[in-house]
Amino acid sequence: MILVHSSGEDGFCYVQTKSLDGETNLRLKKAHKDLYHNNGTDANLCKLRGSIECAAPNNELYRCDVSVNDRATRTQLDINNTCLRGMILKNTQAVVGIAIYTGHDTRIQMNNEKARYK
Image (cartoon, rainbow, N blue to C red; front, side, top):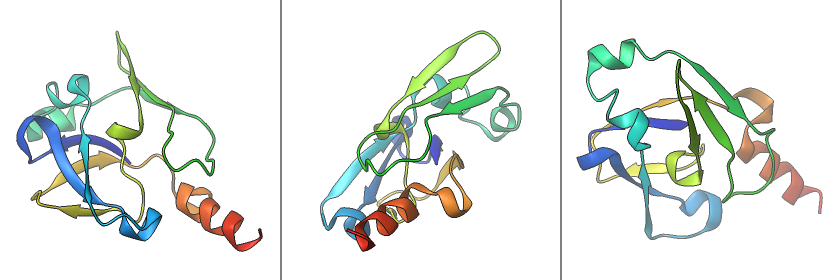
């Protein structure tokens, strides 16, 4: 999921990744400044327009190549601007995001399948 907005200050949120990598410490995620500052209100979120380009799903947990193309700009995102299935939101009331991988080809499903067949 691309993190578009967070109730945390300046678009920050905290997630726990224990179910993905066994780490119990919280990780900091942040909505990209171009997405957050332009879309911080409900009215602006409804006006969000553009396209998203993603690399194919892969088994690299800490790498994500995503770009959001607005009418005039292209915003390159990285793993710090995305949340994976299995992450648990902590110390943050709410986030808004855009799903980029769904169904059988989710990143986590691929990781589990690969680990099962090693």
